[in-house]
Length: 380
Image 1: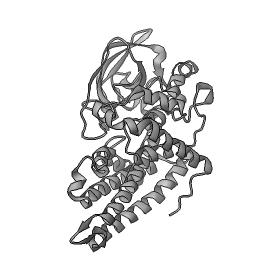
Image 2 (image 1 turned 180 degrees about the vertical axis):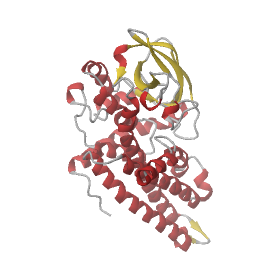
Image 3 (image 1 turned 90 degrees about the horizontal axis):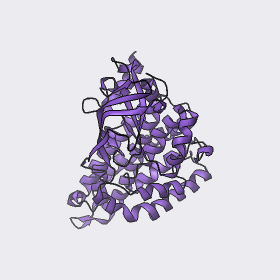
Image 4 (image 1 turned 135 degrees about the horizontal axis):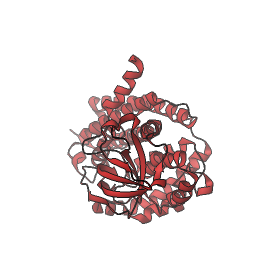
């Protein structure tokens, strides 16, 4: 089906992204995978190309364009290229709205120019060893000490954890914490008492640095409070819809791309003296996946447009996230099976997509949490 949500401007941007990937990412990606981290120069190159801070006001060095369709193009092309390690979506679509929407004028002047140039890489620290999707179980504390916050605690599974120069930390600012006692505290690289653990060894997305973070009596200036005191829960709930949309967009793009490469593979690969595509079972598998992708794409494109217009609610974002990522997981498994033994070899794209994509149903809120959000909205 012909997609109708993009304009010539979006198409031109897509070509810019593809050129950037071909020049600045793909030639280096194998080495980044071995290193377990991307180069800082790649971030600066993304900044020079105008791929960072798409929605940041121009006065701070950004693109000044809040049309989410541009972010969707970025997510789709990085997914098709098999390059999730350079986490531009995390930077632009998850952390960016906190800085632009909640930051004071002084904070924006201090942080956003580097955010847009690629000199300042960002992360958000929510998950803890004992608190994943349950934000109300967070134990990290920020104590009011007059002219500063005294931050203590630890976080885990933090994307960009090694590279990050600016970390938005979710911490308890009341003894009770929970929905009415969490705040966002921004910790900058080099702050005394802020330490990083090892770069965690994951089964996929090897080039995307993921780390534990430790805060031991970290003195954070009072002016690094982001948003309202004790208002983090509302801030987080407000911005999670966009995070989930970004993940969903990558999910359907991955499923579609896997279907494309697998369709070509079964046309070329022979078994019992004829191409696999001549076997009815193979045709049925391809037909099922193609239909599932087409139906999901129609829903996702509607959600992209709604979000660009500011009308997408948290429930439909949750629907998009759980459905698209679960589809991605199913398609990756079925496509790997259709590749046979070759699908298990890391040199084949399907093998890498299988491991890289497995996290999709977990981060940004698990599938189970998405269903709970949807169910509550219908049965409240």
